[in-house]
Length: 206
Image 1 (cartoon, one colour):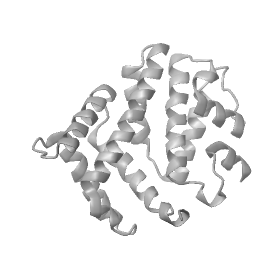
Image 2 (cartoon, helix red, strand yellow):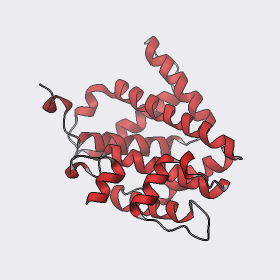
Image 3 (tube, one colour):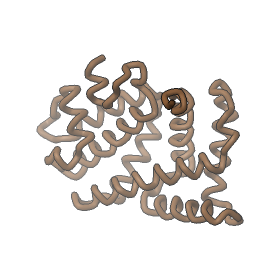
Image 4 (tube, rainbow, N blue to C red):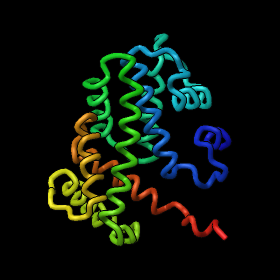
């Protein structure tokens, strides 16, 4: 499993397949899709894709960067995390509508990074103690995640100034990215469930 540690930068092999690994593969998928759709050939501009390709020795298909890498990454996300075809279709659709030229790629990636950071911080803040439910209560956690995401996009009577500011930021990011509430719910739910499996930081602190 040495190549997993190299790919994901993990020191502990037992952590392979966790939340950080999931986010790494998501970034790889985005970058591979961009390379395939926009004809990007400079791997230096796509750092996560470069590590993925060289570490797993993914062959270039039909002399076009991103085609084989996207397929390989998609299969890994399906097998390791249970992501379905609809999840990838939304990503592909968002990219094709908003990345018309190579220059759009970096802007899109920065927007997605900001979106993921903001949405996870916001949902964590709004769900609070509800996130303490045990992992086996998946249906209950998914329902609560779905309601929270719905509130973020449709509720306008938030009283906390910081929450309201974050809600506005999330809506603006998604106006530019164009993901459905179902996609966002599935994404947040997956990260939440993976986070539950991570060791508590306090265990490693003195």
